[in-house]
Length: 313
Length: 305
Image (cartoon, rainbow over all chains, first blue to last red; front, top):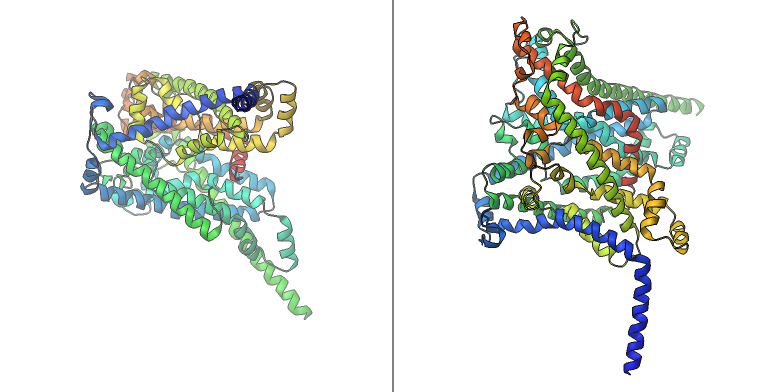
């Protein structure tokens, strides 16, 4: 009995040893990779527990007191939360509503051109703004839209209009943000649709042409269904991050005069957290942000899986 | 019957012609709207500042001169930050590409016991993160505040790019190579370094460019983690001059300019135009040559891995 048991375990041990002698190096690499994720992704996640504390950097994590949901209560009942959430959602919805169609239309139209060189050249030119940094784009906005010396207001004045304060008017912030984003990213975001269009079987187009379908009908019945899965995947991903408006550009475009519409979750967290040193409160904002992103992504993905059979995972 | 058919064909051609005309107009507008602002920045940087401010420079430069460029080139802090950005970009790109490829290689070994669980842990980080404040305290407790490593280490592996690279490795490098190498006694790390990396040229191109452009253009980590001005990257200095005007562009002027009759405000603006050009030229000159890599990356990424 005992002998048999030990024979089995010895066999297992031999198998394990054989497996390990082939794979031990892979495990070393795996440990290295995972240690990156633990130190730089999971450690901050664990740090999110400060959202449930009255964190004091002098006391540190060990001696700061847990206060339950106090920070969240403060957040949800405070005067800033709802306006900030509203700004965030409006900005990203507007950005999605204008930012999605342009690249799709551009890709569909570009795809009808038969001259490959012209196509390539137009693409290359329209990528350019994507490679300019956010800082420079906002810097250019400031130069162009300046009410006193900017070219846009010079033109408006020359046409007999009155200068417009684009950058200090809360009502115009969203439009300036979104249109400059469209300017910067339409060409680049079209790449993925152009790639999807290139993957459509040309025989479909040939058959439709023989049957007398016009180019417009072929766009409608062949091209659009062909890129629909790509569109849905991108829509899911952007919906997931709808609450995650990028910090960089908003922070650059923000000033006291447009704060009524430009204060979004990330800039708010930055201000209360790192400028006013309310660490726990700001972590509660961060936590809320990450949590909503996760829930939205899972929900939209689930719905999409049910309705269209296209999903992220 | 015959006539009917012919008129149908004519109608078709008409709708196709209309679409073609619309396409050309749309594409033309896109090109114009993209190029004109960039073109304007360039001509404004060369022109007489007063003409620019008065709106006289619209299509062609006026009274071409290079004074604004001389000021930019003489500015100490811009060059210190330019050098910093170069160093950060090179170090970050090298580490990021190597680490991302390593992770992609490990996760492309589907039979490795335990790698699936680890992959799930990795994927989770794409959808949930600690956020800004815990991230800050993480860097602080690691003692990395105000160090170049605070900008480099947190983004060492880009998970999304890693998945693209993994797709590339498992679809483009035949598994038979691995089996043959293993039979010849080749250990996984040797296989990775000698066979996988040399065969991954295109994807390494993609990763290199994503990493380099990302690092060159970002300022957020530096805003959070870097305090001493001699360590700031270029984008932070640009932010101060172009967006916040915290550093007065007057600092860029030497005494002799002040005696010039040019108005200071106009000169300020012209310096900004020149600075935009100086800061953007490296990427704008490089990308047309490198865009095939970017496009390739987008395409591999769109294949679900």
